Image 1 (cartoon, rainbow, N blue to C red):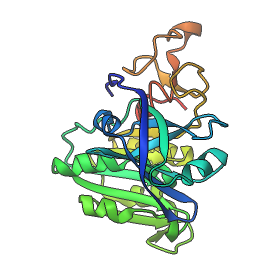
Image 2 (image 1 turned 90 degrees about the horizontal axis):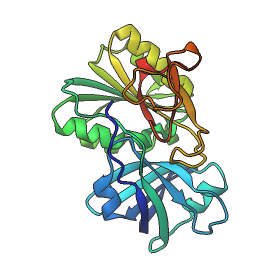
Image 3 (image 1 turned 180 degrees about the vertical axis):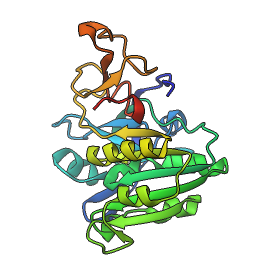
Length: 274
């Protein structure tokens, strides 16, 4: 997929609203007009905790419309706990938008979007874009429990057809979301975000279907801007996203290591060499 021109910078934003969508899942809406205008589907930001006592954390940009941008995240540690405790009127400095997101310009008429857990945070902008241009969009959304299938109605309101799964069978189909995808009618293209095992399964299913898939890889970033090389993934050297360093021919291999934070987080599944 084509790389995006970087519009990343520090934005001093103000919290408009904070909601808890489920136990341990927070949605924070920001007044951030310039960030919103620059954001493309699948990009992320680095949020700087107000206390400045811990490092910035990478979070997918969930919504970006008008003056508002939002982040949806699981509360998993000190940094996300601090962010989840923000209230309306609080200031939050963020760096973004960062990374190369989804290419939603395809003329595919039947699209599958696959989201696992908090991976749902990366795909709303893409789903809305595809629905607006008239594509049939099926959202395959899986979580551990019914409670953690957060904000599914927002996707339905955008025009998506929902296929919901839970690990414990408390709602929708019981089992992994990739099993539901494998049983479904073949789409023209697949977009996905979620845990690595899920993304590997999506890549395999896309290969069996004979269609291409764009995968948004989840990772804990060190710097978030490509400087530390701490979030690399093997990628074919002929990819348009391949970095110029190190060279592909080094050691006789056609594989290079791409940074998820810089060349990604979204990659073509068939170009990854996990």
